[in-house]
Image 1 (cartoon, one colour):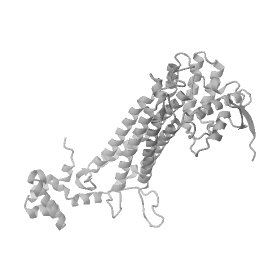
Image 2 (cartoon, rainbow, N blue to C red):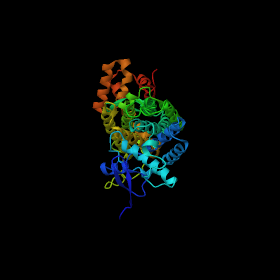
Image 3 (cartoon, one colour):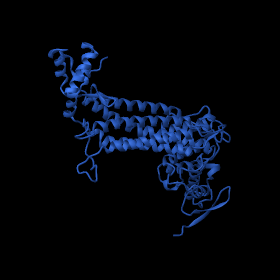
Image 4 (cartoon, rainbow, N blue to C red):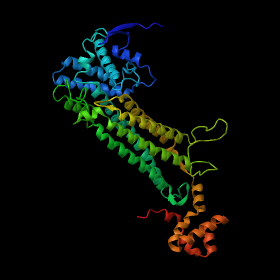
Length: 465
């Protein structure tokens, strides 16, 4: 099927562009030159860029750099892009130039052509808006693209990830309170240890995630400082006076968040340590979640030949050959997601070190991995919370059985009869397959009354503060 084409021009020359597409010559060249993979530039970056273009247009007009009509056209087009009305006009892959120039020009060209369309001018005419002279006025890809990463990452974390993590924390907190009086055997080295309550065990998971949230929130403080106004290398060449301060304030108004201008744009444009730092905090969250969901997987293993202390909801058949089998599928999905994120964090760390002189040339990779990581963790937390965590039930019989059978309850006797005698009791009980009580009485180290008073699993699980 033949696609109708139009001719567009840029500084290199003329090129055919699909007639109905709103992108222009530079975007079309990028489509031809960077046909690498299927990873599209995240729409979160596109929408953040639209926010920046809108803010720049307002500030440029306020500083008499562009007139009110052009400013209004840019603002209206950017609003439409931000609301997702032109998502199909951003076809470029992540794997392009390291600065993100092709994507910045993509949005510049689309805004220009939206304005042409709305004013009944031919697409590609650059009338009434020129992609560079008007839409990109007072800007460079080198300050705009990293700012878009920072804005999109902050919005995703603040509006999606943190609220979902808080719901998971609340669910675990509720379980911890419900199970505060259920005594069970703790385990260290995967071997029996002294008693703990199930509520205490779950409280550790809750606290780990709460701490991870605090780490992530703290990392965002650095990202609120924007490089906008630095243009090509950080000097602010071709910007009117106070543009950097004013556009940061405009972004703050548009988002309701405390964005400011960076005091040293050379640093924030030559490297993206703040983004690397935030990605590292997402990695720590991933490490935390792997630990927690592996714990759930271990505690629920069985149901008859494993620990079986937790009963997970039956969501789907677990085997194509073994009838009735049910697997901890949400645990597996979560740990796969988190393993992927750990690998993506390593890539971001390497990318962060790729700041050559005045510019880092791995910006699209950093953007893609951060946004994908946030989305993956958010979705995995929602999935596991709603289909599994909220529905977990304790297996009271199994929990009590392990308490009754544990040899490590003998630890409470050690301060009374000494470590060596307590060891004798435990070893004899294990060798003869008898209870600790029987063993202690056979050895004659305590009376029945003394044993019953000292060996109290619930008292042993009480926090000693």
